[in-house]
Amino acid sequence: MDPYVSSSSDKPKKKKKKSKDPYGPPPVTEDPYGPPPTGTAGTESGGRSFASTTANFGKQKTSRGKKSKKAKQKPKPASSYSYEAVDTGPNPVLEASGWKELQDEHKAGGVLSGTIDGSGGVFEYAITGDESQIVTVAVPPGESCQGEPGSMMYLTSPVSMKVSCGADWFGRCCGGESCCVVNFNNHTGEVGYAALTTNQPLAKVVPVSLSSSEVGGTLIVQQGAYMASYGHVELSYDCDCNLVRCCCGGMGLVRQKITGSGTAFLGATGTIVEKVLAEGEVMLMDTNCILAYAESCTFDLKKTGGIVNWIGGGEGFFNSSLKGPGLVVAQSMNMCLLLESLAAEKMYRR
Image 1 (tube, rainbow, N blue to C red):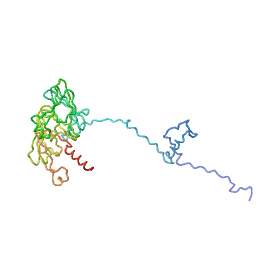
Image 2: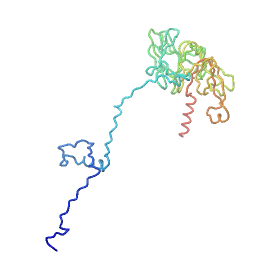
Image 3: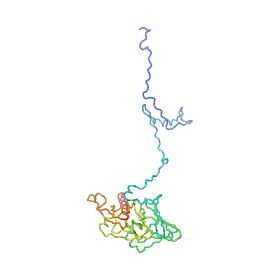
Image 4: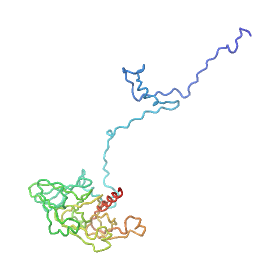
C-alpha cells in the first residue's frame, strides 16, 4: 500500500450537525415561593437555600411540548367578599293566589308593629323574633291588657299584674284556656310596657283586629290558641253538633270563640298566612292547617276522593272547606303535629 495514499479510515471525519429541537427550548418557570433569602446560612453559591430547592424539586416538572402548570392561586378570604341583600318585593305567586304572609305587613327591621284603637286612644304594639315571638305592648295611663297565665316575660315599673277569674271563666275553660286571666294595669301617669309571649314552643304571635270588616266582631279559633288581648275582648266556646265535622274537621267538638271590638293575639306554629274570602268563594284546606276564621265563613267537609286517595294521599277521608265571606288564618304546622313528630322521633331513637 502506498504510504502517501490515505486510507478511508485516515480521512478526516465530518462533524455531525446537531439537529434542532423541534419542540424548542424548555419553558422557564418562575419560582412561586419568590426570590431566595440572601446572607443566610446553608445556601448554594447562587444564593438559593437548600430547603427551598428541595421543596421545589418535583413540583415544577416540565416536559418538552407541554406547558408548565401554574401555581394554584389561593382563594380570597371570606372577609374580602361583600354581600348585598336585594329586596324583591312581594311574592307574585302568593299575591296572585290571594294569600299573604302575615310578616309581610307592617314589617320593618324584623319588627311587626301596629296600632290598635282602644277605649283610651291609640294602643301600640310590636312583635319581634322569628320563633317563640314576643309582643311588646305599650300600655297608656289608665289602660290595661290581658294575657293567659304564664305569658308575662317582663313589665316596666308603671305596669302591675293582677289575676282574676271573671264571669266568663266557664267559657274560657271550655275553649281550652285557663279559668284565670292575668290583667296588666297601668295606674300611673306615664306609659308602661308589657312583654308577653306564648306558652307553646316555637310559637308565633298573630294579631287579629276583631273590629275589622273582615272579621265582623266574632272569630272562631282553634282550642288553646288565645294568648293575649286588648280592649273589649271576651272568650267563650262554640259547639259543633255535626258528628262528622267534629270528628274529622280538625276543629273538634268544642271550638274557641272570641268576640268583641278589641284586638286578640293568637299563638300559632309554622308559617302564618291569611286570606279574605269573597262572597261565595270556597277554599279547600288541610284539616290541621286552620288556625282561625270569621264567624261569617261557613265551615264544612269535602271528601278527598276514592279509596286510593284515602290510603295513599296522606290527607285522610276529608278536607276542610271554608266558604266566604270573611277572614281565614292558616298555619303550616299546628301544635299537635309538632308534638307527635317529636314523640315519634324520640321513640325512633330508642
